[in-house]
Length: 318
Ligand SMILES: Cc1cc2nc3c(=O)[nH]c(=O)nc-3n(C[C@H](O)[C@H](O)[C@H](O)COP(=O)(O)OP(=O)(O)OC[C@H]3O[C@@H](n4cnc5c(N)ncnc54)[C@H](O)[C@@H]3O)c2cc1C
Image 1 (cartoon, helix red, strand yellow):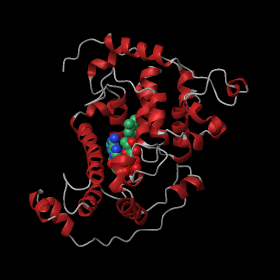
Image 2 (tube, rainbow, N blue to C red; image 1 turned 90 degrees about the vertical axis):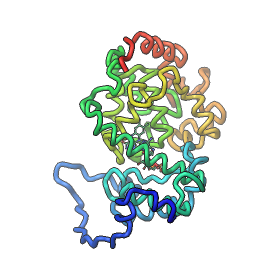
Image 3 (cartoon, rainbow, N blue to C red; image 1 turned 180 degrees about the horizontal axis):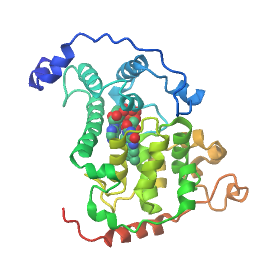
């Protein structure tokens, strides 16, 4: 710990050693003019206040952080901190999270627990996107970070957009994720990437549509992280995924939800399908009886269409 604190900029230890400020909170309002009161289910899922944020941080570090690098990609497991809403609202700071993590890692930032180190790198992604927004303000004006990608021939496909928004694409992992978002105001990070890539690559719909939908429904909606995540997935952003690396939602489903537990939780009507839960068979009676929709797009043809669209772009001037 000594070693690390000595090597940190003076501001950080200084802040740490300050006595806690005593701020008297006023009573939480039950209603805010101009905003709908969230339903009870959301309020139970995301209790307001600093005490809850600190409780989540401690619990995560006690019970999960060690295994974070192994669990963080599995949506069926509670393998992440679920602190994003509290960070976005400013109820807890990223410094508090960082220092708590370093403390648990015996003062080490880049050695010790692999799980804790990985978690710290995620906190840094958040900071990275804040810096991008400050350094490149065009991203907050609906512009792509890579200007040449503005020429992409995005499709106007309102029915497909609506199917994606409502979790009716016929791809169970995508639909389960979109339903999780609508029901809880939160979506697992792996699924944010998979659903965003499906919208922008397989449906070739403008990332700004997805960004807007997420911002409307996410309880942790944070302009910089949301924009950064969308532009990463759409290959229009900084350090973004190469355009030809397109996640296949069925392969992702088999890999990260192998037993279909996450899918079954959000789409109980297909929970009985065992291995076929990742992509119901085309001769299945669930389609005939309209229990679950057929896929709205052919994955390999739509992949080719996206590749063509990106290949047709003018060259980036850097
Ligand atoms: C398309 C897309 C949209 C996103 N929109 C948002 C958003 O509006 N608000 C938001 O807070 N995060 C957003 N993220 C990032 C990430 O998905 C969430 O921060 C994470 O799922 C929150 O869950 P957690 O608190 O359990 O995270 P943990 O895994 O416990 O991570 C701890 C914290 O690190 C930060 N963090 C983790 N991953 C990322 C990341 N990839 N980028 C930036 N910060 C990260 C978050 O503040 C998070 O609370 C988005 C990612 C994508 C791909």
